[in-house]
Image (cartoon, rainbow over all chains, first blue to last red; front, side, top):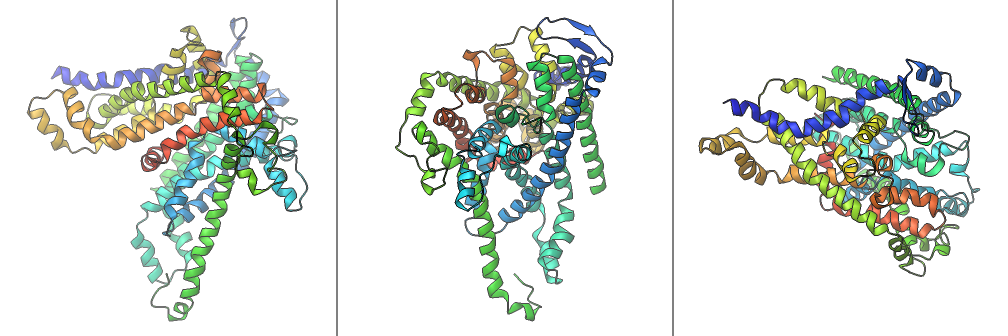
Length: 286
Length: 291
């Protein structure tokens, strides 16, 4: 009997041990590290209280990257969720050949963000990229895309959405398939048109899924990193200097782990706020 | 499509029933173009001599979607530079993650799904839920400092071990194991089988769906992992595919066909895994968001 009570703990030990050491401890360590000033090169750590926070809060580059991240989030998340919802509704149609479309839309999800960034970076090339090739063919002027202060962030939004839209549409599709067809049939018999049954039945029943997608998408985009490192390094003129890239630049390019950890702590708090919002939204849905 | 009780609309039915699918197909095709165009061009360009990579992209012609003067030179040069090593490293890392991580995560999922024990809910909330919510990239710097104190920078341990346990995968296993009928297990237990035996001879054979789903998830996320390998193992001999192609941008930035050849190799492996197993993969990634 005693052996049996020990057994579940034995089963849990490897995975939980690893999660505690490599995930939980670093989460707490982020908070601790943010109160130290340390350099990667010398390896000396000195307790510094809130000095790192003072430094970043007085730093216009931090605020600029914070602002860019907020603008990016306010654009990319609604765009991705609206398009993902539209795509999910399309691939949920019972039409011949729909399975082939569903398979094709899975392709971007399997491809890494790095590959996406590399390929789209060349597609958007200001001199000879295919997008400009198509634009000039249609009689438009060539666009600078990633090299323009006005267009670079939009280019990153496009790259992120190439994966993001099909990815989140899968969650919404799963939600749509959970809706019992009899409910929609009943609405149809009662004379509801397509828009009415979408807005009065489908959308409310998708609320749980949409709340989840909103939060997961927001968190994922909040950490957008690879396309910035590979394509813009935050430029031109800091217009794509998203906060995750800024923490990497501080921590690993300049070796300022203290400031980097302070930024990560701020980000961690924001992530918890976003998740708190999810729990609040989901509570309302039950 | 229309309610039979509305005769006025019934007359419009043939036209609408014809137009609506046409509209849906048109939109779906537009999306397919956006998905397929960059992949086809990149694939074609990787088989094209470097100076002709952009020839039909700008100005655009359909020939951009097929190799121009077909050549394997990009792939040959890439592998001559040692790209094969990165491919081997990534396969090794991804397979090791599936075997070792899969084992650890399955055991934890089994304990959460089938046992009642003291502290179960606390452990689930404090460890699994919390680590599920905090994105791993956010804690990469303290993890780097920790791994550095172990002396694991530029080592296989540093690349592999921190990513083995995965709360999403534990979720998947827990859900699956919790739904196995108790009678199946009771019957074996009455016959005196040990838990380990039950696990191997009863549970494992019926667990194919969750094993495929979890393995795909672990393999592909390790194959596509970038941030952690970039930080922990920048040494040439330990580089993974994603790190290698990202460094190629800076080093060989104008040898586009090689950059695209590397990208195609990085892309084709997960694509070939996802397509035949798409039901499992979709279930794996959407499994936790919905309940």
